[in-house]
Image (cartoon, rainbow, N blue to C red; front, top):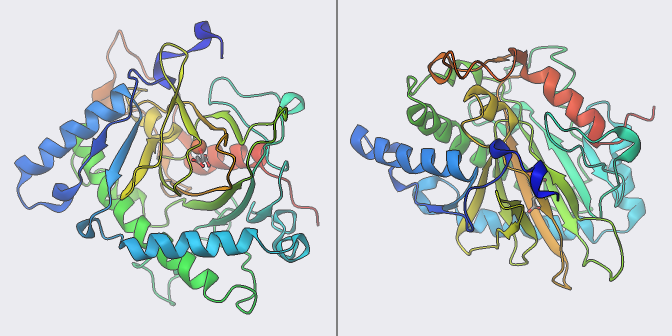
Length: 349
Ligand SMILES: O=C(O)CCC(=O)C(=O)O
Ligand SMILES: [Fe+2]
């Protein structure tokens, strides 16, 4: 990447990624929560990426992480015709199986890649989105708002006989990570000096997307990338990677620094919507994937966003005369839908 193109708000000011211990996330002691918020603020403003340690008190049991990786590997090892039964082109909501090369890299918010130049990626994915089953706070009697950007629900699941426990495991994983995201949003609010419950009214039907990713080992001479350089477009992402490295993060010097797997951690990165709320003080940092390990690589990103009908608008306490809002307010659903339509194959009818 041309060093002159490295935008301060999209590149990490560091040569490694910090590790944050979230043990105090739910502490009744506000001093302890504030101390955590300061560490989070430093990571988000300087790097845009950090690792979190997955202890029991984060609510994500380690066995769930190994189970989700296990079902992901089993899904991708199915024959192509099985995976194509849940083909993403069957879905109006960009849900399902996206074969190798089908996804296009979309670039960043103010530097999108023109459609005719967007290259296919060297990875395959299985994508799901928010439905009530993914949310411990919902019951069978709850209904999603109809027509909200046509983005909620209608996931395509493989038959349970094909991979026993696949949907149950993925649903349990997402519901668990979703609760962690809601708690983390309170720490972000504290870090941003707004009331801790500032975002709570915007996450009743959160715009959650998750996907399982499989990156084959990069063949010598293949110019395709596992995932091209991009920023994530929701609020923030929680990523579980297996033991194979591949994720790279752009820094101010135009260097790609590795975000290697660290046992017992997940990777968190800030995405476009939360970065906008903070007037770009929190970095939505450019990253990409290149699997040069010679082995198969699997990862499971969980993209957390606010309700699709919530408005994303720069926080007043992060603007000034010299630093006006970086963007006009917009609906989260408009932005996410536009990005999804550029990345994924459309509905094929
Ligand atoms: O697979 C990874 O490590 C990162 C995936 C990613 O950046 C994405 O899905 O947006
Ligand atoms: Fe990403």
